[in-house]
Each structure stands twice: as structure tokens, then as C-alpha cells.
Image (tube, rainbow over all chains, first blue to last red; front, side, top):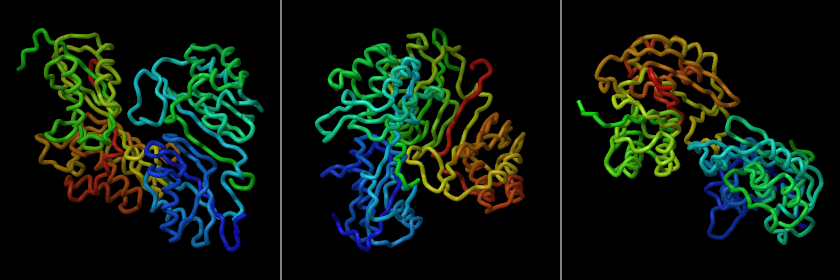
Length: 255
Length: 255
């Protein structure tokens, strides 16, 4: 265990446009959100600081409320830190909130749950103001049928059919989906999913399956059978990354 | 007068993201919306076709409802034409509507009025999903004061104080503002202006002035005096292009 004596914990809520980034996680030769944030931290502290997120996001996936933690000597109050970071980050990454927290706080290990939202534009013509910020499907989807299928996923279940790489998960593929709603506003369809945790690609795989139901390509019963198979290879294809937004990460003591 | 015998008039409602374009109008060595549309028309008809818009938009200005007219041999019905154009245009330009109209119809000369909307984000931190699609001002604006100033512009008036280049206008600087509303939704402030016509930079100059009132840098009385001076040099600076959207152009016989 790292010695945290004299170090201050820091918690950030971060918004980013996923389009220009190869996801959250640092990778040699690629531009990632983690790299940009760590570069800004290094400028402010003058020494390398490692930042942890609540979880990775894939290339092209957006965040309205990713949470990030790091430990470092206390230099600033949280407001000053927020401004300093925003002044040193690219415009496509913004710190929405900064808080000082105990040094033991960890954005990933302490996360109790998350909410993702998947945004789909269901209209004949695409929206030039949301390019790469939604999935555009021109033909009308059956929202009522998608809602019936969505209800089949709520609760504690094995989501093995909805993870693209089950081997990547070290432990169980069981997760608890607390809420899964499908709402509409004008031509937009929003899939909002809250769970205690998410498997790799789980939201995009769920949305990919629900959309097949909405298109009438599979029935609600087919969807249920795919869920029960606990096998990714029988489930429908994934939805594209550009429609996915990490909205919020929940912690016991931080709001 | 051009001989229109045997030619079909075409009317388009066009949405575009202004960011990648040097405005509407064709210019040597620059990428413009007119050029892209005329390129797509040429691909479809196999011959050069000139397209007219209701008016130019400046570099970086967006359109949700620019109107465009052209005359050409009748090749397609309007639905097929819309799809063909969208298939040949960059993703940042979309045809929202296409109609066959009399060959005499002209998007600029027949326009009876227009609505523009200026979108301003008034929040401490910028929005990564609306970069180049709004004006971000972090300090709170006084909306009530801006509304008082806005009321001073409604009606038939000389708007010489609000055009950046009055010499460019061949005729009068008098226009009739039918409606000017300031509405808010969350941290967004929307300035919506409908007039029978607009002088060059008129909306951005009006919004620039209203914002000065909202910031408390000038009073409503100062704003009135600037209006009455009928002289651009005494009026406040222009608002940036990125917040401006051409929403709708009105015609007598087309909805």
C-alpha cells in the first residue's frame, strides 16, 4: 500500500467530448483523456501525478460526469484548482467540479454505481449540430417494444450476453441494473441505465439489442432468450460509441 | 431576364454547421456552403447549376433553416432530390426539406422575413458538446435588464447603429423588427429576432449591445442613446459568429 502521509486526496467531476480521444486510458502514441489530465496536473504541481477514473471509457465515448481521483501535496483550494485545470486543459475536456477528499478516496474502488445515457436520433435526416454525439437511425423505432425488452434487464442478473469480452472480466458477469428507462424528446430517444457496475461494452451491447427489437428484427422473446443464453455470440451487435455518455458516478460520501 | 422556359424551380430548406465553412457565399480558395451545394447539384444534373440563398451567412454562422432556390430541368420528385442531395453533401450540410416551386421563385427576392436565434451559455464552465455552437460567458448576465433594452428595438426603425458596414447596404438602414424575445433554459440564454430583413451583422451587433447591458457595462438608457445615434461607431462590439443560427425564412406561398 502506498504511503499517503501528508498527501491530499482530490476528486474531480470531468466532462469530455469523446470524439478526439482514444478513450480514457493512457496509451503509447495515442491521445487520451487521462494523458491530458495528467499533463495538466504535472504543469500545476511540477511533478508527475497519476489520475484514476471511475472506469475507462472507449474511443469516441463521451462523459458528462466522469469522476477522477488523485493524491498530491495540497497546493490550492478546490475552486482555484478547478480554474487552474480548466486553464491548462484542451477545450474538449472541462472540470465541472473539484473537491478535496481523504487521501484514501479512489474513484474506481469507491464507486457504488454509475448512470450511463445512450442518445439516439430517430429522424429521417441527421442533425449537423450533434455529429458524433448521437446514433442516427432514420427509420422509426418501436419504442413500446423496446421498453418491454428493457424491463427484462432490470435487477440482479448475469449480463454475460452483453459484454463483448467476458474473459476480460476477472470475476463475475453478474451485475445489478437498478433502473433502465427509455424516454423520448422530439426525435431523440434516450436510454438511461443505472447499475452497481458495468461490464465491458455492456451499455452499447444492451442498446444494440434493444434497437434490434425496436426495428422489429428480433422479438422481445428473442431478446429474452439472448439474455438467458449468457453468451455474447448469440446477442445482437453493439451500438456505436458516439451515442454513449457517462452521466454520473455515485459514492457514499460525495455528492 | 433569364429565359425560364422548360425549367423547374426548386426550393430547399438547408441546415448547416457553420464552423468548417467560410460562410454561405462562393469565394475562390475557400470552402463555402454554396460551393458544396452547387457541387452536389452538378453531380446530380451533370451540368453547372447556380444556387441562391435567402442571404449570406458569415464564417462560423450556423443555419437550422436557410432557404435555397435554383432552377434546373426537372429530373426527380422532391423526395428523391432530397435524398440524392444528402447523399452527395458533406455531413455538416443537410437538406431538411425539398419542394418543386415555380421557376420564378427566388430565395432572396421573395423572402418576406427571417428569424435568427443567438444562443449564449451563461455558466461558469463551458460545454464541451456545444463548442463553436454558442457564446460562452461565465459571469451571470442580468436578463431582466437585457429584456428592457430589447423592447427598445421592436418596430420599424433605423438600425444604422447595428450594422457593421452601412455603406454596404445600397438602400435604407430601416428595418422592421417584428419580435425580439430573450428566453432562458437552464444556463442557456436565447435571443430570438424576427424581422422583415436584416442589415449586415445586425443580429450579432444587437446581441453584443444587449450583453453589455446584461453585464452592467452600459445602462438601458445608454443602449437607447446608441440606438438613436444611428451610427455604428457609438454602439457596442459585435457578438461572436459561433452563437448565431439562421432559423427560418418566410415566404408568402411556401410553408
